Length: 226
Image (cartoon, rainbow, N blue to C red; front, side, top):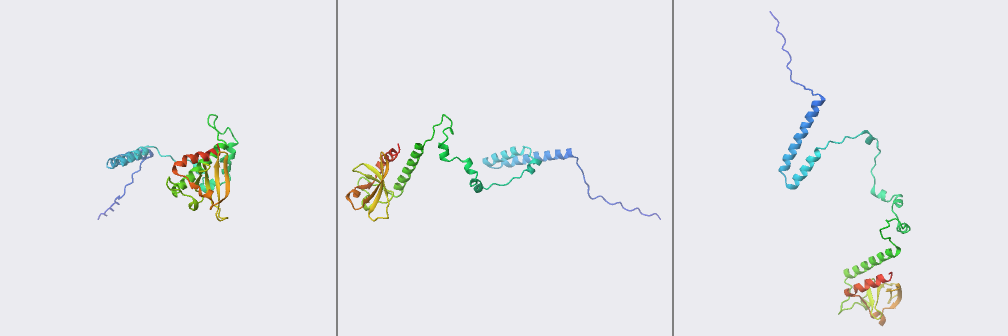
């Protein structure tokens, strides 16, 4: 009797290997297919989405940048904004106003130089705007038929003393009852005028300025430092 031969084992798994060149070609083909799919998807979106998709597709054409060994060798660390701005080196890189004024050539020769008088005028203009904005926000302007004066006056009110046609700001003086101090703006500069008796007839003539008197007040304030 003849012996039966054993049945050979069936192959259930096949493995196909590709060389490196073939793998590169397959990768390029996949990239092109992905680009086609992105383009088709872009056509079904809105105009803005199509533009974005087109930009993404264009960016995908760029070759990816691989990290190099020198990048891994760098000791990179995050910078805290607060620490950076508050560091001791900040004073060295940010010039102070005094330092800038002491260096007449820090700007080009064609640019106008900033002087102490310029800085003073900038301050005066800012002070004027602050005082005027307060008058607006608190509704402190007098009107032609209604004057705010006497016991209605408040600290920081802009006043006019009509007998001398001068402008001033009321300074509150809580240390002395019924006594007020003024900061008066003369052509020669600002000067304190203290100890006004709030019950006196002279104080009664003070009133807040009208909106029509704003240009004259600004001119008087700026003339102090002209």
